[in-house]
Each structure stands twice: as structure tokens, then as C-alpha cells.
Image 1 (tube, helix red, strand yellow):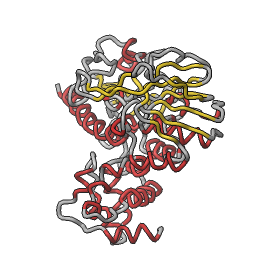
Image 2 (spheres, one colour):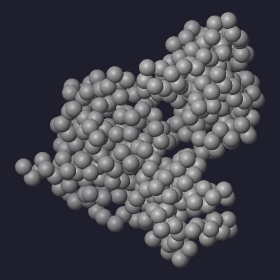
Image 3 (cartoon, one colour):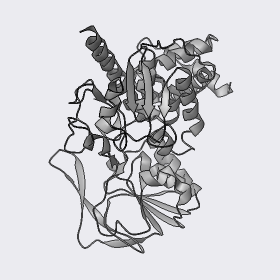
Length: 416
């Protein structure tokens, strides 16, 4: 064990009302896990974290801890350094995943549930339902499991080996996985019901990049962030890159571009500092890597030579959010070899368009009630396909709630 992990664990005050757990969206039992670690009960500590959140190891790598657990640590609130909770959680969770053995066996007459998509929402609900004695099949459109975790998060932030290990745990637990199977093209949701699946969960995420809707967006040196991150090796960006957007994905793109040969990367946001939705630490890492940050610049046009930006006029839109519009007469060309657009994503419509009765909202996201039930009986949804691009831990929280709803739905249906 690394020395600083022990020393940091010993710094935990074991608060009666731990604010760190309150600051965590999934209520991770942090002080209890730390106490077990220091009492040489590492197995129990790992089980505690895993039972609370099966993607604990993933979250320890990519959560914005500065805004959640570590940001609420009493030691930090008092002006000192907070306990390095993410490193402690990472150590415990990594150990437990190595020794994990399924404690259950799915019966032959167990109900079947189909999970469409193997991102954080799909993986989390698979872990929840397998414990409730369900036969689970995960349908994944890509050749490997992981969804946005595998294809949208760079290796330097989340090693792909972690996803592979989680998949192995699911397989050992009895979960069936069908890669390269996009539901809605060949097979449909109705086919799943016809083959005996009693419920279907849609956790397909948001893979359709939003457009800037400005001139030049279809030029050959312009790319979308989510597509670039899927396989950056096939792109030739050149020396200078402009990234439009200021979320975690935009900074992932900037840092990845440096690691693939670009020497000058500028991240441009049309708002002020409030428009930077990326975590503070991610911003700092990007700047350490060499990224320049430009604020209050609105993209007007993309040309062969770069992007024409204008100064932004910031205002409050009808929904009460900050927005920006270009100020005429302030246009200026920012030269670049390549341009990458990173302004959020929306869902693909292939499943909804091939299935009658699934309602969607105006923004194309799937409409559900508070328990993830769609307008079609037996079909549930959760994660980014419902909320838009959010955090991994948010998808896990939603999936746990939906898992209970699916269990209740099938139980009630079978008892009729």
C-alpha cells in the first residue's frame, strides 16, 4: 500500500455526521470504509463500497471529487487539505475487484431482462438486477463493452483495463453480453419481448454530437469531440488545434490532442468563467499540459485557415440561463490546423424510431417518470439518454432506482 494512503486515511476525523458522504451523490460510506481499512479489514471495506456502488473504482478515477466528497471534507472546510478520499477509495475498490467472487447463482426459471447499452447506466443496472435473480443480457452496438466509459474517456483518465475487469465480474455472475448488436436496426425491442424478455432497459447514452450551426462546419479539418475520442489515432490534427466548448469532454480532447502530436491547443468558451463546466482539477491538468483558455468568444464561421470568433455579449435567456451572442464588428480569425467541436451531445433515435409507443421530449431525450418507466409498458430507461450528458455517478444513482422499479414491475406481473 502506498504510504500516503495510510497517512491520509489516518487523517480522517470519523465525523458523527460525515459531510463527505452527504456531498457524494450516491452517499458513499466513506468514514466506515476508512475505518475498516485501518482495522485491516480490507475485504469488508471493499464489499461495503461495491455494494453501495459497483462502479466505485470507476468513480474514484473520474468523479469531480473536489465538488463532491473531498469538497465537503471538514478538514478542507477548515482551510486545510481535505482527506484524499479518491485515492483511498481507488485502493480499496481495486483490491476488492481482484478478489470478488459472485455470492449468488441465477436460477433457471429466473425472469429475463434486456439491457440496451453497456455504458455506466447499463453496467450499474446489470449489477443491481443480477443480485435480484434475473437473467441479464446486455446488447452493445460496439465491439467492446463500456459505452462512454470506453469510447469517451481517455486512457490517461480511466484505464480501459478497469472496464475489462468489471465485464469479467459480470460474466462470472452469469450476465450474457452480445457485442456488435445495435437494437433498432436488425433486432428491435419488440423482438426482445417476443423472445421472452420481461423488461427492457434503455441505457444507450448520448452519441449524436450537437452542431454549432455556423458556416464551415462540414469542412474537412472540422471534427466532433465524441467521435474524435472514440479513436484519436486515426486523426491527423496538425500542430494547432482549436477546441470549441469548455466541459470535461472538451478538456479531454485538448489533453488527448497533445498526446497525439499537436503542440498548440486552445480551448474556447463563449461565456465567462461560469461557462467552464469542467471540474477545477481537470482544468488545471489541461493547463499544465499546455492548453490555452479563451473566454467570451463566440464562433461565427469556420474557414480553411481556422475559426472566426467575435467577442461575446452575455445575457440571460428565457429559461434563466446565461447565453452568449456575437458582437458585430469584433470578428477576428484564430488560425488553426484543425477544429474540434465539443458542445454536448444528444441521443440517437434508432431505437425510438423502430419501436412504437416510446415517448420522447422536445430535445429528443427519452421521457420517463421518476422511476425510469417509459410510456411503453415493460420498457425502462435511465442515464444520459434520459437526462442528457451527466456524470457516471448520476447514471449509477438513476440505475439503482430503475432496478427497483423493474423488479417491482416483473414481480407484480408474475403475481397477477
